[in-house]
Length: 228
Image (cartoon, rainbow, N blue to C red; front, side, top):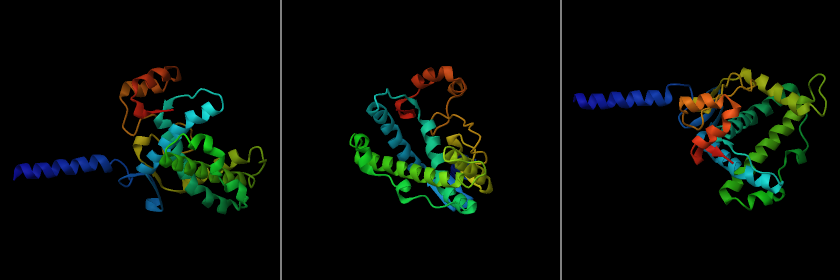
């Protein structure tokens, strides 16, 4: 009987460790306002995987050498983009921005066949989805930027993104802590490094803070934690 009670207690503690360290819903990478928007870890994984496969192909098509990076950097980019994809249309409504033209909201798959033809079908679909999300976010943020004082067509996208990231402070944004991002300070540009969805070893985490040691960190990581 005591052994059974101990097993139950251990299971409860394990569950608390896995889910109790944040307000994030199980299996979700991002939760905004307690479920008004959610993005699953699996979705982030799929989009990140497609990005990491496409990046070196794109570099090669442009006559450049692909650069490797930690996959956590790509994951953070994807998480940030997904958050902005939800907040940007709402921010546009608040700012009174005009709708972008249809062509500015459209990704033409045929324009990317030099990349997608070298990917499997699932990765190609995820890559095109990521491009579509990024295109829509960029188009709407440019329109938001044009509503801002002293903005111009050349600075509209940057001004619009700043508006959206400031607007994000009105929302309760929970991000799985293993992504190393602070939902309350998305505009800081200071992202922690966790190396993967798993927490990195302390020695690697320290080296990541020094850009000169980036190569050493990459060499120490398994392929699953490297993008490119």
